[in-house]
Image (cartoon, rainbow, N blue to C red):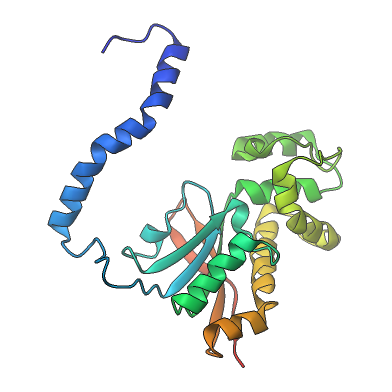
Length: 240
């Protein structure tokens, strides 16, 4: 292969090689994994029986299988920007219905994580105004990936999908801002709490899906810099 002569050439080749490179190494991974752990890959004739529904963030640094030390078939997963669970979102509701009603899952975990770009964005939008120092910090932490609308000082574009998706969280933070710590850590906790509350508001639906069997709802926090997962809000039990 000839060497690239410009940064743009190299960048273009890198982009085009992402999926081909995955396809090249995949067979080796599959062979090694099957050799080391013969039962790793599920039997298609055996139904999946996950014990947990994981509602987490799309962040690429979050690997729920590794975090929970789980094998394929043990964790049912729903991920999106900033681990939201909107009660009117048919995608989220379909996942919940299938997990509880079809697969018999009885533990649901909302998993937030530290330094979440979506939460940082919502936190900044909820502020009355952004200081230059905060803008730089936001960029440093990666929240610029969610650009398209200025901070609390400016107007928000109505066609900004990130703002629309996170608007319930933004409004929650705005309401609680007076007298609150006002930190990103606080916003992260409130985000998890809000999604737990959304799940608990579906009590009758969840009990119908579970056949009146108790379902536990957990609020957890993950730190991708340490690999540590911890309880963030008290576990709630949905029961008849």
